[in-house]
Amino acid sequence: MKKITLYSLFTAVSLFISGCATVGPMGKLDTTISAKSQEERVQFIILHYTALDQPTSLRVLSQQAVSANYLVGDEDPIKVWQLVPENHMAYHAGLSEWKGYSRLNASSIGIEIVNLGFKDTPEGRIYFPFPQAQIDRVIALVKDISARYQIRPEYILGHSDIAPLRKSDPGPLFPWKQLADAGLIPWPKADEVAQRMTAYELQLPDIKWFQQKLAQYGYGIPQTGLLDETTRSVLVAFQTKYRPAKFDGMPDAETAAMLDTLLANLKAK
Image 1: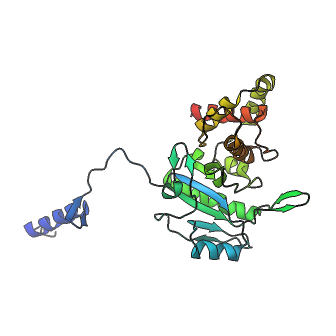
Image 2: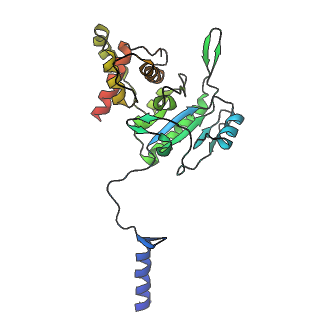
Image 3: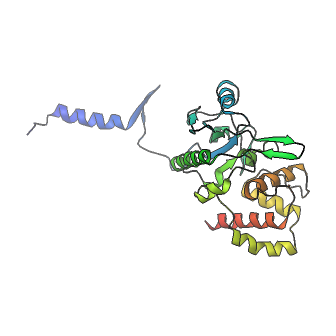
C-alpha cells in the first residue's frame, strides 16, 4: 500500500481548493457559491430570410455590417454555417422589442435562412418557398439551441415579430406550423379557435382589445385605441405567422380567436 505522506495530503487539498477558484487580474476568485438569481444571456432565437441567393448571403453576412450567428443554405446538400460564435453578439435584429425586452441583438441568436423573399409582379407579390430539406435543418438547429439555453417557446420568433414596422421576414411561406408540430413554438389549436370564433363573429372586440392582447402576447404596440399604421403592421405580423392565407392587417373574428387561444394556453402552463 502506498504510504500517504503529509506532503501528498497537502498537495491533494491544494489541488481541490484550486479547482474551486479561477485566476483573475486580482488573483484567485472563489467560484464555489453561485447566485440563485441568474439566467442564460441567450433568451431568444430570431429567424430571418436573407432575400439574397446563397453566395451573396455568405458575402454580405460575413463582410458587411449585418451578421448572424448561423446561415442555413438552400443548395443541395443543405449546409449550415456558423458565422458568429454563440457567445458573441451578431447584428441581425436591429431596433427590436418583445415582451418589454428591446435591442435583442445582445440576448438572441440570429438564424438567417437563404431565401429570395419575394418579388412584385403585375399580378401581385410572389413569395419564394423554402425547400423542405432546408426547413428540416432549421428545425434541427432551433431544437439544439433551444434545448441548450432552455429558451421559452414564445421566445422563438421571426424578425417580423420583433420589428413589425420594418421587417416582414421570414414571410408567409415560412412553415411555422412545422416548428409548432416539433414542439418548438406555441400554436393556436384549431378546435379552440373555432369555439371562440362563434362569439367573436357576433361581437367583434374593439381595437383597444386587440392592442392589449397583442401586447400581452409580446408585441411592442402602443395602446392608442386606433387602427393606426403600427397596429395594422403588428396585425399583419401576427396573421402572417399564424394565418398566412390572409394577412391584411384587419382585426377580425378569427384573429381575435387565435389571440385569445394562444394567451389562454400560455397562462395555463
